[in-house]
Amino acid sequence: LGIHFDHIWQKTLTVLNPMKPADGSIMNETDLTGPILFCVALGATLLLAGKVQFGYVYGLSAIGCLVIHALLNLMSSSGVSYGCVASVLGYCLLPMVILSGCAMFFSLQGTFGIVSSLVIIGWCSLSASKIFISALDMEGQQLLVAYPCALLYGLFALLTIF
Image (cartoon, rainbow, N blue to C red; front, side):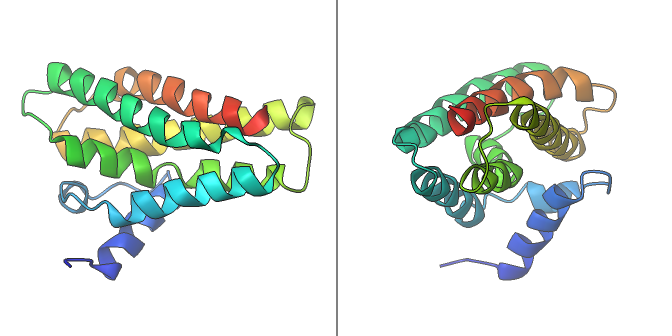
């Protein structure tokens, strides 16, 4: 099947520690096992939190991958595959799973929810942009890559809050 648990673990640790430099060689591999697992986990935690719009997670994932794939191909000198974009965006969905897990126990429609959502959106977009920058050799363009990632993860946060 080509599932490398060591690579999945390394990519997950890279996302969980956004201050650690990313290894671009690991992220160039198209691995969709972890992202599918995290996407299903997000849908399951949304369902357990009483949100019935968990089906939008899969549609948002596909549309977000297409848009960011197009943007990265326009911004980078070397092209990027759709599988690499889907892999990175899927792995960086892990903090959003943590937020939706908190939504099972706490209401996120107050000040606590807004602040924690902003922190999680920043965490997701910082991790994704850091990985894209290291994988595509786009030094100095992290904020340009982080902005569309933050918009995408902001939509996931809106699904989680409401």
